Length: 164
Image (cartoon, rainbow, N blue to C red; front, side, top):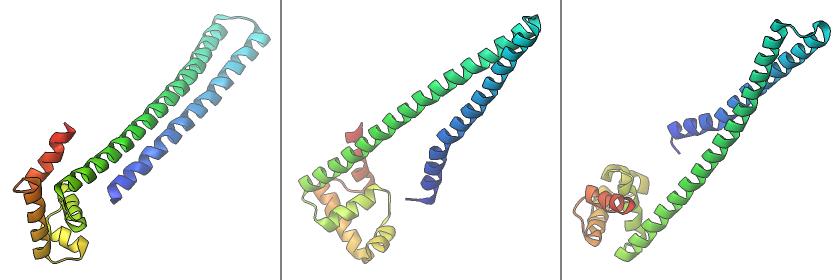
């Protein structure tokens, strides 16, 4: 995985922990203020100041509860989205395998086709496969012929069209 996506994944994994920490700090503060308001009522009775302070403290506590509930819902939604994305990735991989099989691609041609679909050029594919550029060009020509296209863009468009 590239360095950028790894950092993004780490950030995405830390984000719920950060929000949960903020919710916990808010809960501690809300509990303190509610207890303080309750203590003031016991000590001084009901005054307008204490009533307002109690209302603010209870509102803060309600905000913490709603924030925690909302965080839980967001995490559940993110989890569902991750699962759906994993299914889509698997479905695309399955679709590629079936299509490559239908075209009768060899294992080497399928590898080259996959790299081409990922946007790699001949030089990059040759380096990654440890093959000569001429070999990769010949394999790409065979892939294009079997797929019924004339270029890398045409190959990509076949799969993009299927996704739409």
